[in-house]
Length: 399
Image (cartoon, rainbow, N blue to C red; front, side, top):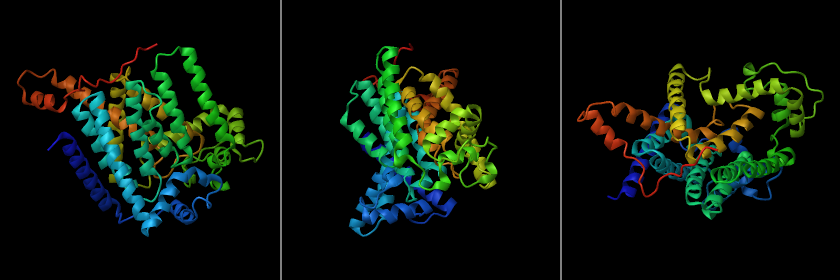
């Protein structure tokens, strides 16, 4: 059995194990529909004529559901496509972990992604999340190769990035993140980097202000009114915080910018609270056992991510993860957190890779202090085989 075949077999088995465990834990059977699923499924038969306003931002996902009608079903083809996407993303994680650290880092990252119930549950749902997470991971894989091979206009990179961006309205941020990472990773002058990145994000900012696809789908969810109402977790009023009254009741995105300019400290406090809710993942309405598992797993993720980020601080991996994290965290800060925490994984899926490299670094540090011949040292030497010298990750000078 070749290494590639072995990798695919193990990843598929991990995927199936994760789905069986999570299905049993959360009582998931077949495709799962949520209120948002109803909007997507209802628009699919008339695609693309049925799209209007904010739903243009979901053109890729609704188009996928439309293709499902060709085989007589909408939900099942979507879930199958999501399963394939998750499997490919896990293989990409395995590859990135190996590339930037070694064998153990790759398998830890892929296993966390495939087995963690708060991530893999979305594979069963007719929602954009599962494919969006997978697309971000695959984009990161192609972006890493483009940076290291100095091919910023790789058609594969941009094809995957654009396809992923078409799944959700905020997907356009991924395109900005890709462009930013490509610019930061190249040896341009600091002034040129600032100029290009400022230009890219200024265009995205203007689009966010006026594009109908980047507005809330219902007035009650308008971003501006959610700000002055102090909404932290959408639909959970007990998490809200007190905010200053607005000067007007305009609910446009431009009004949100104006309100933030008038009350920067209050908005910063609200934004950080929203991001914190997404990152902690613990919820008072979850069971005690699920919260305990979540607290332990997320604490480990963040601790080893910090170590991995330091170890890889001069590599393209940290550039990619930072460029993806910043805009998606900013969107959460400007809008709201969601009750089941699925928004945070937009960027946290990439932190998993960094955490894998951090764990391997800690293990190597510990085992190097063991005496020669110690059984744990021999095991660790096998598990922490490093990056192939033929394909080292690019390292950049700190300017």
